Image (cartoon, rainbow, N blue to C red; front, side):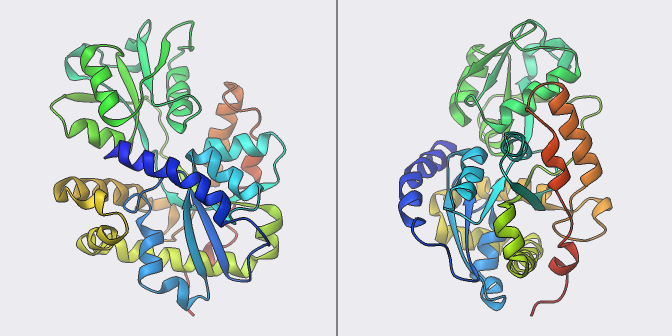
Amino acid sequence: MSKKLLAAAAATVAAFAAACGGAGPAKGEVTVALPFASCLSWYPLYVAQDKGYFDQEGIKAKFESTDGSGGAVQATLTGKAQLAAAAPDAYLSAAGTGAKVQAFYALYQKSTFSLLTRTDSGITSIAGLKGKKIGISAPGGGDVTYQEWLLAQAGLKKDADYTQIAVGDGSSAATALKKGTVDAYSASFFDEEVIKAGDLKVTTLRGENEPQLVDNFLVATDKWAKGNSETVDEFGRALARGTQWGLANRDGVIALCGKHAPEETKDAAFAKVVYDRVSDLLKLPAGAQGKYGHIDTEGFTAYAKQLADLKLIDSADGAKDVTNDHVGAWNTAAK
């Protein structure tokens, strides 16, 4: 299924460029660039649309898939989208190269990635990966930054201490692990579930002090966000309602996604597993104090500095433009 989703994402890139070109959007029209095509993975957006929450806020929302978080951020810079759902490293990389962007509204409240090894590999810690082969989906993905950051915390450097190999995702990654092509694999939550659904037994390796920080948030250009502050409030309020409804209605979300992406829900058991993983990512930590969209900006700034110190990104400057300025508006009653 993962391959189907990625193929669908790739197929929509050209259509996205054509569909979103031309003059700027009218007030309330918002195109959201997603890193990949999936209804279940982004179900708060689809719930907000199907339940009429966007309509009630005067928002006309459209979702378009791109090729990863970097592609989603790039879509906002070219004006093809007003908002992007993006991983932190993609946002920080863009900001670090001078792009005038800002980030807000945490979608996923914890890491979407994990480092997997075969249970019978004998590897029980990150340090045990010294001299080993680490699989990634493809160069430049969020899983790559996560993996390099995690191993760097254990004092391991790419090339000097381990070899990085691109092996694809999902079933391809499972095959690489099974055959010993790689000793570990940096997996997205979706690919992790694809691998676990097979007959391969895997163990998750975690860092000793691995923080649980925002892993996907909304990104916009400074120009659009400043000129459309009311729209940001309205969009976030509808999204918060979509999240709340979705967390309380698993069967309703799966039925809804069955209309938008039937290939995702054909295997009902697997659809429930993916829904549960996404819902866990969406649940608010204690520090959010029940407020949807809240970002631990202090923790995020520290994380960005780590990435910069390890030279995984050019600069941590973008952390200063990650805000909670609209949280109050997002968590008020609907209009």
